[in-house]
Image (cartoon, rainbow, N blue to C red; front, side, top):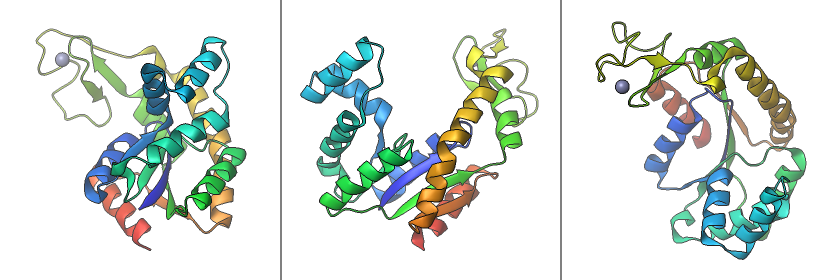
Length: 215
Ligand SMILES: [Zn+2]
């Protein structure tokens, strides 16, 4: 199963990725992780990426694509992959298609975890972190009685990270929307897009994803 997973911050993408990894025995490939690994290992592509990042530039698509290609050649990707964080625009989507065509491993589906922006905004602004153990809570969805303190750390406060403040979240969601809209059109035209309702509990959303990719 070869999947690209699209979803806004707060859509539950990380959780659903983990579920897919377990259910299908395929790795989740995140370009952020690939970049960190390649830099740490000092591979040729990693050094190229490091040079760009040190110069304050974006790592070019060819380098990122090269890393994805190397990653796909590892044994655990023999049955497929879940690509997360790539592509982010049409040129990247086209480059990915060309590479996968070359490998004779075309995408099976592009799964979009769909959530109303208002719901996302609420989910994200409701996030609180225990200042002691870093456990994540949500003032809208955590069990009643657990707030406003972490139930495992007596006296510890739940705090809101700067990243979770309204203004920052508004900007993150705007960026996401602007990036994702063209990809949605692109993959709809290619007949690959599977839109999944993500406004439900983890189990239900996962069942929706499985149904969507089985088509
Ligand atoms: Zn705690």
